Amino acid sequence: MAAQAPRPAQRERLTVLPRAFSHITAQALVPEQIVSYVTAVGQSQALLCGGCAAYDYGDQRTLIAYAPGAAPGEDAGEAAMNAAVKAALADGISSLTVLGPARPAAAPPEAASREDAYFFLPLPAGEPGQNLRNMLRRGSRECAVTEETWNDEHAALVGMCRDARPLEAGMRHIYGRIPDYLAASPEAVLFAARDASSRLIASAVGDFSGLSAAFYMFAFRRPDCPPGVADVLLQAIVDRAEERGHQYLNLGLGINKGIAAFKGKWGASVRLPCVQTSWEPAGRPAAPGARPDASDPLAVFAPPGLIGNLRRVLLGETRPFDCLQIEVSSRCPGKCSYCPHTTKQDVWRSRHMEDATFAALAPLIRKTKRVHLQGWGEPLLHPRFFDYAAAAARAGCAVSTTTYGLTVNDANATRLTACGIDIAAFSLAGVDEASNAARAGIPFGGVRDGILALNRAKRRAGSEYPRVHLAYLLLASGTEHIARLPDLMHGLDVPVAVVSTLDYIAAPGLEAEAYAPHETEKIEHARALLAGAAERAAGMGRTLHYSLPGTHGRNDCNERVQSCMYIDAEGVIAPCIYVNLPTEEHDPQRRAFGSARERNPLEIWNDPAYARFRARLASDDPDLPCIACAKRFERIF
Ligand code: SF4
Ligand code: SF4
Picture 1 (cartoon, rainbow, N blue to C red):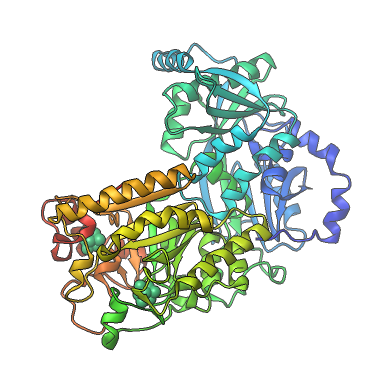
Picture 2: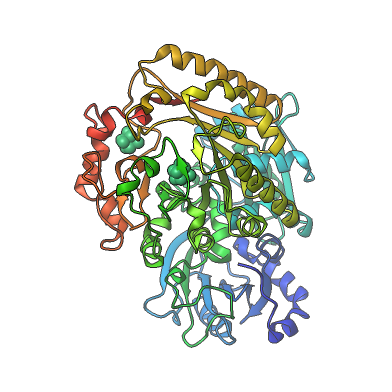
């Protein structure tokens, strides 16, 4: 959500805030009371409500309702919290989130609360246990820890961690603001772990702005970082906190099992309850344009807010589902020769998803890391495509799409850059007009223009998102063209291409364009060309991924159906795109387990028939559509 101009009353208050804020920060018990941190990272406006810190983020307010000066493990001041809540509700806000030691008395019954606890390590820390001693010994053999200032190497490490998992726009933004936080907080210290060749392998930020509590803030490490290095970095923060006379180190919340185990290993025992409660004060409408009209079905996708974003960054809060692939439209003017949209035109059901259907998916979307907007059709033809993307991003998902590219003109490229999408993939089946001819009705030049328009829009916006990918279909008749793909990537400044082969045989005769598991010679030839292309692309600083069938099926498939789902334009949930084509015909391969318009989608996931389908795939007894499915045989390179 774009930051709003402060209301006049707040502006008045902001002129007297710095001194009051240093008082809050000096007595901070929880990281959200470090005002320079929240304002820099969350780009929010700070104010005081009843003596507690609060932050306005657009028209949403977050109140940090811990009484200044309280100690962890003691009464953290429920009375003070309730007074602060009253003050926070005193002017026009559309939503209030309270972070405090208990549920506020003023919260209406329907307000959702989530309970957790901050973990504190009392200082000086006791003798480490055997396990921790071993880790510290091992970690200190692997690295040396120094105090550093932020530089490109640190930015690259954060970028590596950021790109390793799906992140929605709000979180990506926060990662990008870490240098601003370090610059704004003189008491925040960046510790770096370097290996014997001086390579940065991990970093951690300790904040020593408070008088009694110090804070373990961010931590990053390379995927190949050796065990024990994270402990060595935390030891450096503990040592510094002890030197400075802090009584506690706040290690954050225990929400994530892995983090809780890490904290337990360090002997963090003292707890401070943390209850997060959110509601929308009655009769206080949102500022115009701040969020969707309440009558819009997409209004159910409330933004995670400042605290939600900060928590996901700091705690690595996890969601159970990896990806929802959502077919927002099955319409398409293309006539690609290999696509069932073309070969089954007489029975094709062309339709856009309705807003109410997308809204019905909200319970599922909130539990999913990535939403990929694409099905059997062209997603950008949907009149509310950008609103759907923004809604999924508001719900805390990374959002991506695959497009045929023709609708990406300058205006739509600007909207793509602004709607929260992190990956926009452009489909191709060749490297020029002639080799791409199988994509009839979709001129290669139009796709190229779409990519260039998006590159321009990103430059205008000063944004690296959405990352542009090529979704390249390798047809067997065009295998040789793949050698030119790295040059195309370079020419269009595309960092990543994902090359797949024909998985769905849409009409008799198309088998020749696919790679069947038994066609080992054909596969080997393609593999050699693809490996060479991937190497050339790497030499140009680009990444080319590809998949090809192996000889044996697995007890799993590349659609990762144990953690991903496909939802068609009518809200019908299926394991993958191949078992629910939008056709009006009897399809013995169809496996659909219910519509989100009729049942809670989480119930559908748990439906016994759906669970059985997944269990069969995981065993040696896959269901009919999976037996010969290419996705069960493919290996990703
Ligand atoms: S653009 Fe996509 S949906 Fe349209 S015909 Fe081609 S492959 Fe099918
Ligand atoms: S193996 Fe089964 S679930 Fe997986 S993609 Fe193929 S048909 Fe779908």
